[in-house]
Length: 495
Picture 1 (cartoon, one colour):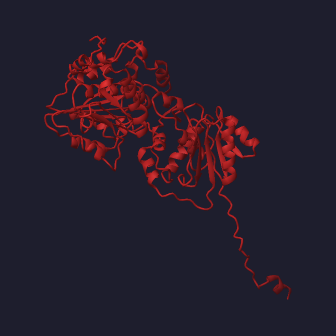
Picture 2 (spheres, rainbow, N blue to C red):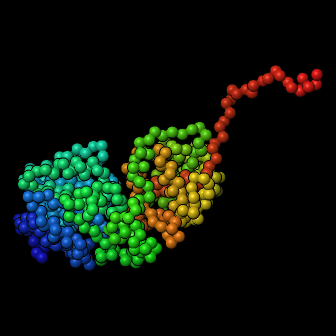
Picture 3 (tube, rainbow, N blue to C red):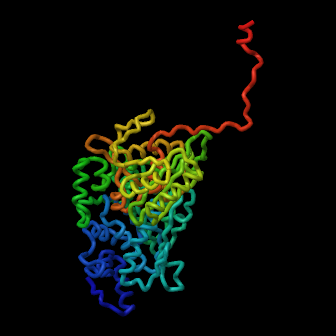
């Protein structure tokens, strides 16, 4: 390992250039292992070391295609950050694109992790990191020596079509690749055709689905012959929570899909652990919003429990979950949130208000009732009890799973806002089965552990399905007059 105590910029540049074919050596040299933020960290995990050694095989003769499926919490975001910094700092005029399954993941996880390692990087003075790019500080190379963060769009793939950099280096990274659609892969593949160019295309993800291009990169898949693939088991990584992993294995069994995906880094046997599929959500975002006069207006209120969560009031009328925008609040206490609910009830005369009463939500329920607002408390952990023809409550482990099941069916016909963050919340929630074979959704705490956002908006919409609500009574037409008949049957009988 080279000493990091170098102050001369020319020395640092020379050192970085020496790692053009040595990504592992670069990572060991470029960061202050064992110091400050990295106290207690000796370097990359064994699986990361293996990946970096494989990456050393990059050459201008053949594109290097790397696919990695992993369990949760194995350090893939850190590896992505190291690859970006290695690629851009050891080859002049490197060009690259980084994308992820959602814009939220890209900004708050992938790029945020890059920002952390950039702060620790010995060569950070040579590059500038901004909200959507990292590039050379040399004014003559700003446009030619850069890697950009690019959210994907299935209907606008041009950003992935211009990846040409003849004679230099091209880097393409897909994070959470299992949810990136086929057109993005096809466009990227078609662009990587420059001869005599170092081309690195690395894709990472949790193996949540079997029907994706990501799955086709692995043994048995259509494109497996072109990709070098690997799986990473969460149990083999030093910093994963082994006690939590063991609880999952005890609850589900080691060969259950829930454990295969979240721990073993293996694809599910029978489909996906994603509770609501992406196609249904996308269709609901495009569907015309429709409702009828007799459809009840229902409010669902999810109450924030932590500082970075939101309290959300969702308004749904029949199949229309779009026309009345969800109201989102940060930092409100229980009294303030109850006042907002009371104000909204006063202006809309909602037919039902279902409030998440767990934790601090109980205070919101109590205050609303003091204010005369007719709220109904919903306990996510309670037994499912909606025994009507729309659902079999015995399928679900608790009330939260039950109302998400109802929401999943409604999304097939309903309309929701075209909002990337909301869509990510709906599709990110995963599920498994308990010992009684009942569907059990992962908790918000577990979602946060694997880097997903808290599904506050999605939970608020789900709350609108807590119990059936009678159709609202239509007001009579003020000009209505009953029909008058001249015929009197009693008069005829008297005659």
